[in-house]
Length: 466
Image 1 (tube, rainbow, N blue to C red):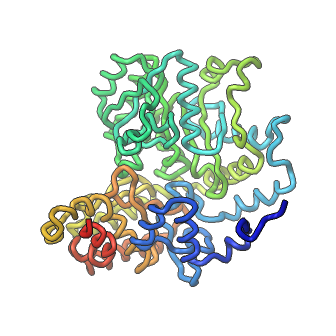
Image 2 (image 1 turned 30 degrees about the horizontal axis):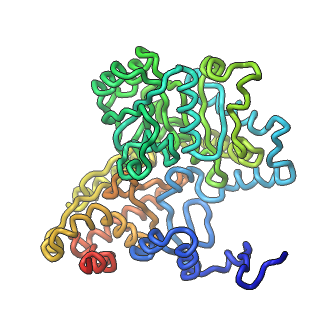
Image 3 (image 1 turned 90 degrees about the horizontal axis):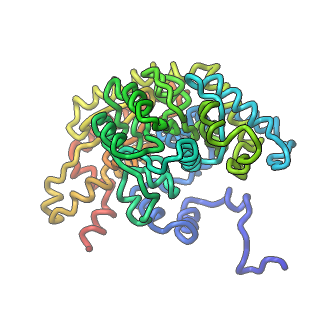
């Protein structure tokens, strides 16, 4: 039975031809109206049609610099030729055959074992970071025989049920409760609180990020992770390190845990593992943990399945991505460029009160904005306090995108922080351009009032109408 006029299906060619207005309306109707409306309000509903390296182009041919970087997925930039080339090499082989072993997955696991810290050796592959976190939590339970997990307030590990249970943001947790029981939050960087939680709870694992990304690029106290490693070992609790956003050179070393010479029991990876082209995630653990958890015999092998996990297409792209990151020494480049970028941004902080703090490591940088209501608080009976905390960085991001051609976005758990995560291949000239754009923006809009009027007229109007 063929399609009728009212059931017309859109083709790839149809999607390629969509303009900005058509994308917005189709997104509103078939995905999420609220997100589409907000994107249009703050001016980030641009229709991008081409991308290469650190640059993207819209339907009118305007060029932009991507300083969002796929939340850390684009360490190699857009459409890196090595990754695209690898996909072309394997375009005729079977993508998935569950009746055979994946040779590309095996080769990828071999390579990851060679570059991972310490004795981490055995991999499990899936499609996303959240799924990888789920796998790591299950590994900890089956290995230890315990049920509880300890995690950090304001941490972020994903939005599937298990990952959400150890994500420290009530806004995301409460609508879906009850979540996984036995998940205990502690403040990030607070060693006494962690030790108390370890002592009072029979925990299977402590899961944590090396740097809290969605919390606003929060760095740990010096020496924190060495003590985390010691404490977890003392209480026979697995130490799960979520390097989904920080891994593969982002923070100036191949993995962020190398900063303190620490080796976790389970290292969770995703995002840039796919070279910015394919979705792939997973974890790597020790041979001893994998053997005790899932055995070396055949009775537990079916517990580790994931339909798309480690498929030939994704694994081939990941092989090329890892090889490029290592051979081009992008971690060292991130360290050098990141220090340069942070220094430039901190100089801006001295000029503008609206910049509360600049922090980060390598090319994982957060620019925190000051909350200030002033006259608008008076005019709106305090409503602008909410506007400030929820939309200030979005409005500034909209200004940066539309007036200066630089893409930025806020962090999920702290919307007053603009994330700056350009690809590791970013040039010094591109870093300079980003800093100069902020300088021009803040010099033109020296108060929150002016920025809000320029970028947030629609948001303000909706607030005043309530």
